[in-house]
Image (cartoon, rainbow, N blue to C red; front, top):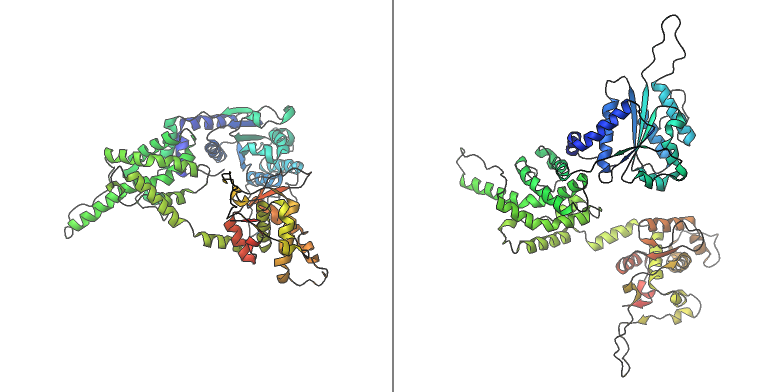
Amino acid sequence: MATVSEGIEHALSQSREFEIVATHLSALLLSYPPAFVFLHDPETARLTSSVVRSTLQALSTSADPLTIKYACLDAVACFSPRLLFDTALNALANWTPDWQAGATNWQGQSGAEGRRFSDNLDAFVHGLQAISAEVSPKVNGAGKGKGKAKEPPPCRMVLVVERAERLRDTMPELIVPLTRLSELSQVEITTIFISDVQWQGIRPPLRASPEPYYIDFPFLTKQATLDLISASFPSNLSQGCTSRFTEPDVYHPALKPLYAHFIATLYSACGLFTHDPSELAYIAAARWPGFVKPVLDMYYAQVEADDERSSGHEDEEPTVIAPPSEDIRLRLIRLFTPSLTAALDSLYPRLSNANYWARVHAPPADLLSVHPARAPEVLLAHAVANASDLSPNNDGASETGIEALPRMAKFVLIAAFLASTNPARSDLRMFGRGPDERSKRRRRKVGTPRKPKPGTTGTAVKIPQRLLGPTTFPLDRLIAILGVLLEEYDADIRPVAPQYTLPGEYTEMEIARVALYANISELSSMHLLVRTSPPDRLDGTPTFKSGIGYELALKLAKSVGIILNDFVYEVV
């Protein structure tokens, strides 16, 4: 999981709710830990993971005779068994792969080079046993005479899996072994699952996993959430100015009382949708610079006026930033409250980033000098102007994206657009290449509808398919259209291949290559092609639909020399 800010992490250590979890977990690990612990936090799982990591870090560095080694894994990043095994063993063995040394993973004691502990579950269990033997070697027997050999301090390992619910989708076969890791490896190891989903939603069937030791995180109160968000306010100006687009005085200590009122308003507007302090702090970081900009504009204007008035008088004290009056604070809250829900809609699902959103919705200069009745309109108009100025030129952006695509991918997208736009019954007329098909090709013109018959209204006009949206098509039809386009527009610029002598033989080989199907899969993952059939379905032909519009298809066609309108069945 992503790390939280230093301010929130420091506030977590002082929070009563998180202190209960940390104390409970420490007491378990230092006394008689269970083999499997499930920590459920439906709202703030990322903060809970941070608390668990901090607790384990403190236990591993303490002077207690008990040696604790831990590994924190993210089930999203470790999406394969080998990644999970290697990450866990490297962390438990305190091993950091070095790029200069070949980026090798931990391989055990010296002399065991070439041995891999991540090939399968059995090798992983042997790796855990090897780590335990290195830290606490076994005593061969009692010493001779009256005295006995002194036993080394015991070693206890902890494996933490964050976002454990993802194991159900990526590696369901590892859930049972991970929960029974202590039983399989015969070493002291505790597995901790952290998830926002209850154990009943992850539990394997047939009760194969043991019942965990449950720790439910208490819900954060409103005041506790506001305290955590308030802790994200930087303690000094150098920490607050993290972007070159942010004013240096945005996080001035004198503005912290105003920030407290601001986050209270933010919680009232967004608290119905999320209680996660990290998400609310992210939205606050995007809206706060614009919220405080009118106050800073007043301060800068006052400083300029004082400089002009006090020119030649060095004894006068400089103007300092002061919190705004109650009237200005209420006016700012009324003015910016509607934009908080807009920020939630864009930033919570990560449709945009905080830096870009803050630049787009930055208020105009001297906003407080505008009449309060006109201020919302001015703010909205300025946001629209900022969006048009900051958005890249559509032509340039499209051309840059077109140049980045391989040539075969461009042909695939054009063929997919034609297959989604043209009806299937028109393929022979539009793409036929027999002796008479070229003369029979014609397009239906719907721009000038026929005259209505007498006695009819004549209002029924057929709408072109490309205005109604893309339709689905099978993969075979896409390959057939692609073959026609390649034969007509790509055959002359291909590398010379004398082994292909028959007409169209070269194209048949091109459309049968594995690279073409890899291109289709890659374009589908980029959402330039939309797969409509289930990906796990083995019977039947896969179906797709185009994910690009007419303008982008036209630019793609121009880049490869295709006249797109000659192949569109209905042209507006």
